[in-house]
Length: 302
Image (cartoon, rainbow, N blue to C red; front, side, top):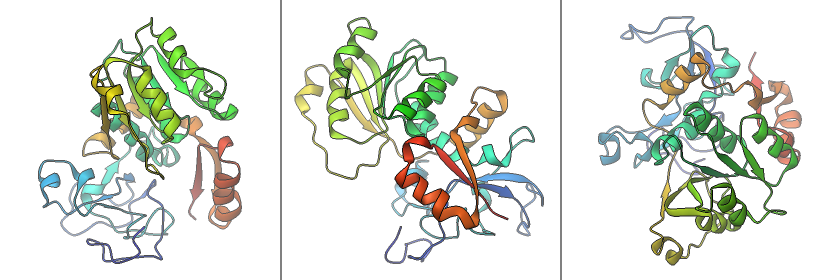
């Protein structure tokens, strides 16, 4: 969240938060013809200038002045009302509830990561971390027909979530030799692709070694600390390391379509629903003190 004025919104803390949200349209601008009052929608929260080189190339997630509704200004999911650009609004069909609509954003992060990766049907995949994004990656891969998903996770509850969402093998790095087990599961060659949704040095080291020749490690995690990589571990087996950030135009609609078709079934990601006056005790504290037992806590705004 910006401590000084954000270059696009002009806002800084304190701000209203919430970048994963859905709602109902109350008013539309005079020049809007393709969106009606009462429409049920989700909001794609990226704020971008549309003029920088990245935006001109279609990479709005890499905008030089990048921000997020609910993190950089313009209100957020915990606001009673928000005003957003038409390009940020996506209709959801009647078959998708507003509750499920609020999951489109994190699912789109994972959807984009899988799109950006070299994954193809028949590939074996290692996922580091069974938190919300790791679980979303499992679902994105399942929707694309992946038949060998391996998850590395410490928490017993998150390991169960990973199994429930379709992981074929769930390993515990405190008990299993991740590199040896992945090579064993992948017929002695290693995984084709790995996704880092944890951002932990030990996991990074394991993932690189668990890849087969010319395998790719895709980083989704936002790291809290500096990390180190031994380049020779990449060079001598021609492995690749790449980063992905949030999503681009098209990802939200693809996820909405996948949910509507039944290819994605993310309902179990919602582990609690709370009211606005319960946000601190049953929301923030639950996610800081008991995070392993929760994936997404939904806040209902009256």
